Length: 314
Image 1 (cartoon, one colour):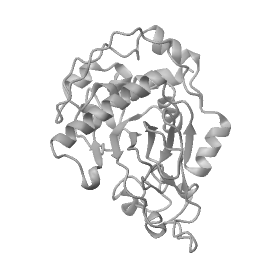
Image 2: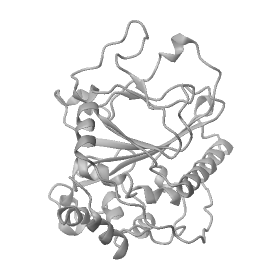
Image 3: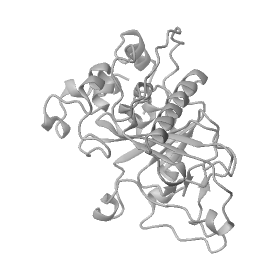
């Protein structure tokens, strides 16, 4: 399924998805002051298209790389936000051991993140995979500081998991696909030492956990996604993955935006702040879980799912 130029016309010419002026709501929990920006808006990027080849690759492997997902200006803006949140958490003793920032629901902490919900170079791929009846279930910022280089044995010790919490244990296998995430690399992760995300291609189709490779100590077939800053990758909840070790000398910064069907409860929020919802455009409001009636999560009302009309008009 493809997102066509009609989508662009709908999005950017009618203003349906045009981001409103930012900085009208205050970040919650962590007090970080956003700065007013007066630069002219750049031309809208083309909406992402999931080719048949890419769709087949995703089905087979459970992930897909997205090159040049973020413009240089947007990458700089997101890094500025991430650095401000890290500095604030550091000042308030809000970091995990070894200085790691593990900030869930980060969208309420800085207004720069709202635009990623329907970012045209990435989000339409999620819509094409899952369909229109979706919402955002998590926004998760991870900043992993550099540490001393670990031993070879330690390098193989990764936190392998599938997403979805206990659902992977409570559902019979093979599991259905109910959730996927887009991971934005805010820092360069091309080096083996950069703390890049590791995945096991094809584990989305496996029953149980992949076996351990006796030679490497890693899960069999595991590979790091060494991508440059500004790139992104999308992966589904059934794909085994883990954060890597960072001894690059620089912090590893990645921001995750997760999408799931609207009948799946969000991971890190119950209800979005009213001021954030009021600041959003119609599609963003759908993705923020805003509904006219709770039953609409299960029997969607058209006014609650503007993505439906956009995708059906292709």
